[in-house]
Amino acid sequence: MLLKKVAYGLYATCCICLLHTNVIAQTELPVADTISLNFTEAQKMFLDKNLSLLAEHYNIQSSKALVEQARKWDNPSLNTDQNVYRKGDGFFKHGVSTDGSGNVTPQGEIFVQVSQLIKTAGKRGKQINLANTNVNLADWQFKSVMRNLRATLVKDFYTIAQLQSTAQLYSQNMERLGKLQTGMEAQLKAGNIARKEYLRIQALIVSLQQDMLENQKNLSDNEAELKTMLQVTGNTFIKPVADDSESADISDVAMGRLIDTARLYNTDYQQELYQLQYQKQNLSLQKALAYPDFTVAPEFDQSANYAPNYFGLTLSLPLPVWDRNQGNIKSVKYLIKKEEAEAQMASQKLQNDVLNAYQKLLFTIKLTTAGSMLFYNDYYKLQQNIIQAYNDRQISLLEFLDYFGDYKDVRQKQLQQTLNLRLAKEELNDVVGIDIIK
Image 1 (cartoon, rainbow, N blue to C red):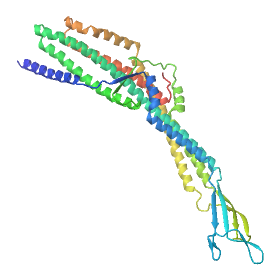
Image 2 (image 1 turned 135 degrees about the vertical axis):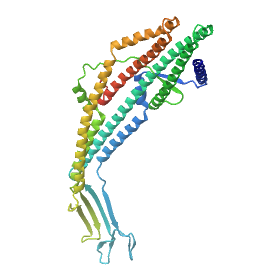
Image 3 (image 1 turned 180 degrees about the horizontal axis):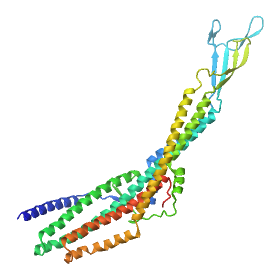
Image 4 (image 1 turned 60 degrees about the vertical axis):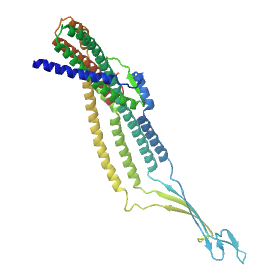
């Protein structure tokens, strides 16, 4: 009696869950436009429309403009001194006049001086070098952003493909279970099967529906991120076109070659090298700033010197008595030591990251063997006949439930393994800095 009450309670619960799921499924939702893309098409769309890359591109152009500015000479300065008013003569009297003796004398002062700053010790060239290094830094920052975004693109694209294949698996299983449930209803009414068997199948359907819901949530999250990267808005669904299988060959890839290539193309490592170069160039500039610049200023003065019309030349040179830029020079020397230490750490980290990514890819490839693919195919063929075998009473209900659940887990692991291989390849390519593994 107690067992019957528990069974009826479970049956009622399952019916409520099924009714709730059907109501959700029947809710009117707007039909989404579908865009089918392979990865090459998605990557082109990403490069054409991504705003983060556009922003970094403007940063490079800004740095190039600063190189142009560093090449400019300092503007000359114009100094002038004019008389404004003299009693008896009025305002702004200039030129010459004739006194009573007939001599011509200047009338009113005119002073004009043009000064030009002359930089010494190659300061201008050193500033140009710094500006060029900033351009290189901005370029590697752009490449870093592009590699990071591309890694996210790969992850989202192939994760969505895996989740779509999982959704298809759930849909196929749900269709088979639906047919089985329909047949069992007739058998239950005829008294050929026990109600507990019927309830177990319904419980399996409810569990599968929960898995489908969770899979759909993950699919929606990744779809939203992918749409943002591709600048797709509105009620549009992006459908990645990708095979359910993946392969990789690293038999001809040596570890030494990977590390050497990474030293040339890894964006983080290259940025560290350019940061060190920048500080070394900055030290050269700071030492040059210890030498004073001088100013050359030709001048003309009328009626304010020993000669009526005076032509002179002024030279101005600060005397480096107290300030010889000692503090800035010392500061940059410490910054160089800091950058040298960070460059050394970056080199060690690069080697470890390449080794780690290579080993993970190697391990993932070992799991994706021809033998494992044969196992997956054989298990798929077995699952095709499992429902018929249960209907024919060749296997028990417990055996059917075990086979059905195991196949779902095996197929999910197969899809996850394909995704793991793709992500492992991308991780190694990302660390190296170029697509060395196809």
